[in-house]
Image (cartoon, rainbow, N blue to C red; front, side, top):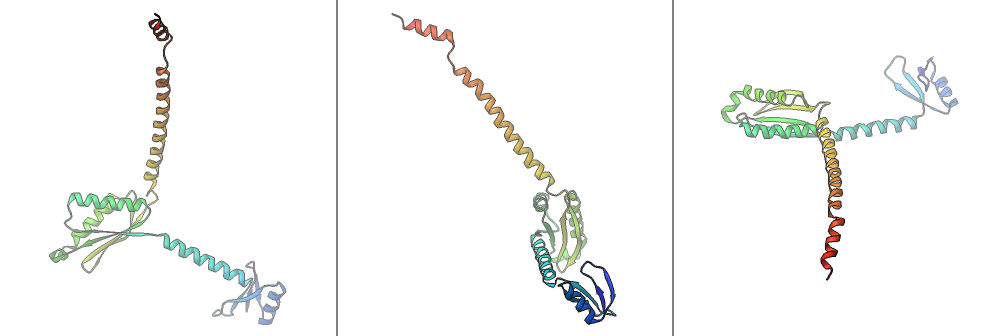
Length: 205
């Protein structure tokens, strides 16, 4: 068999006994990694550590996969301008949340004979949100529906984060102005020396 050391170095062709003796001499395990090769390939490694690392990689991959959200928006081919803008706003909000958006055109009756209208509507939407969304799956006809998948671009959510920061700065500025305006008001409430003298004279018999 072809033997590979634990650091990746090629140790050449060894018999099974020689490979086991070499691995055990380093207090490591001998693992066959390519049984179908000619000759078979075996690697010297800490098998327990190897299994642990593989399990951690698989767990991380599952975690990353579960974090990807897919939202769905449904449209009609003859959607009105107001409804279209409302739906487009939902798509933009989802993309800014860094979620993918599945956009579905629902055909009814004779509308199925004009699939190009649904495709045009989907491509119009993609063009309108191209700054924050990109087409990951082009419009495809699926029975009575046509589906397109949009994914967030690197710009998705950036504007929203900037607006949140500007809002926070504005609130801090308003609070600062309020404190500065409160100070003169307090000074204005203090009685003037001349007024105190006139009040004292008025009280004399």
